[in-house]
Image (cartoon, rainbow, N blue to C red; front, side, top):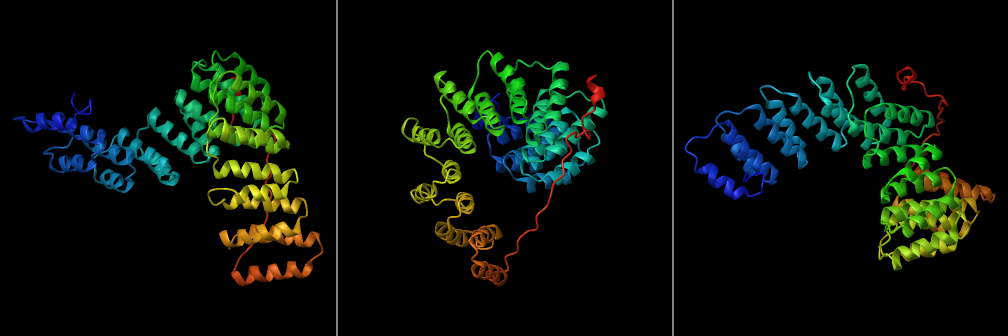
Length: 410
């Protein structure tokens, strides 16, 4: 009781006053320390514990995983006399959250028993680490074994589909979810469904789900705004952002990133300026490097190169290479040699071995028939050991039937 209520000192007093302690009391005390974030005291008790049952091992491993000490967690895991599904799942989840999906997958494959939490940890790990196709592969493997997914796995599947961006896959997942026993009125499930349909281009379905929501939140608005932006509906995205504000929802820094991107893609310069200004003066938000990058991209695409340059120079923090690179790309688009040389000089200092900056400036020179400068840049790249990565083409099937079994939704 004391441990669960966070009164760890009282818990220890009771523990120390016990004449006889069993495995349950030892484990309760260890779990109390783990929950309080005191892994040093938890490990001290664990090391002197007369007899360790499975729960105490798992408690220590979960504690190390929770606080990011995967090395200690793996050491204990390897020392365990026997392991159960909880032990494996804790390690799988830890490696997945640390971005080490190779280790997470290895342990998943080694686990003799897998429960729904194990499958969920691996699938969500793949999604969070930008490997949506692998997430789908594991989902299909789970289906082939007749394991019923829970709502968390299905939400992860929808997130994977959002990353892939395939309309056909989105339709299959939507059909699968609609025929399942999941409660689609749960906010997080509905939000994921809207996000998937919007990002995959099924704006009709996304809009219908969005309008049917009894209460729309900031996340759902941002999903719809981003979907409209991605698929070329910038004006509608701006209109929806304004509707969101009129409905009393306060935009955060992420929402402003979304709408500034939408303005940039649609070339809506005046609207972008207004949103950037309101972000600072109405909502008292400090623009990040990403907001500045959006504005630079917006101004650069519309040919306002000097305005973009002055905006970057006015930043209180040093602009990142992405913002300078976007502006250099705009200089190439509008054949501005003088400004292009200034920006390239900045990039050569920030990222001296990034070939993209050299190639962009070289292209600017080539467009102006300044071949001596092109030759000079190429020689400079050779001297510094800067190598341009070869271009690659990606062939994508319009009917990616490799993973979604149509027969399962007949």
